[in-house]
Length: 57
Length: 258
Image (cartoon, each protein chain N blue to C red):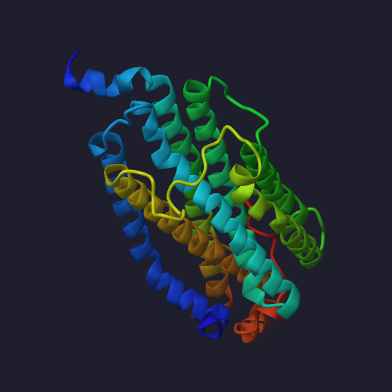
């Protein structure tokens, strides 16, 4: 077994170690992505409204 | 210190500068932490490679509890002083806390299966963390359950304060009851019982998770303030701009929970 293969095998615990890191990446990465997109959208909406009313900072 | 950030307009200015630095620090710490946890840290002499789950599980557990303290303190400040940023902070933090709790439960289950032979046991530590997860969900649901956002915020804040009794139960569950879960091995009398080669990557991951939380918190608070202001502008037009520094006078937007 090559070094990379044995790393992926995680000493037989591959079925537990990788899903654990995967769950963390999906939950936290998903939260970050959703939050980031909503932040951008809220900034765009506000800028548009401020432009319309001429109250830009 | 707190009153300096108390003003929402000032919060927007300061947080806009801090946000990219927080993001970069988060990416750096998590990148280093992941390499260290998955490549450099040694396997455990009893648990083998499965011990690597610890580097995600323990920081997630720390954040699950820590974020709840913040939600509770923000709720207290919101109830007592009606501070406009306090509700926003609590509501921005709760979904992040729920996310960390979910990661803690899922990784714990994936660790429990090979080590204890069970995905789940109704053990005091596991059950009290599951209760914490439901407290987060209950808070989020309650905040969003009312047509009047300020009533929802008050109801949620009350739940968050009552729910704080769960935190000492989580902390001491491993000492009070005979549980499968191991007792504290880092913060304990006599120093950490964990080897330095595993303690260091664990600390780096914990710092990474903390930075990720702060970045997400600031991002979500800014979103809530933007949405609140946009709502006021679309309702009242330019007149709303005069209330810029007085967010309390503005109608609250739908709380951020997604």
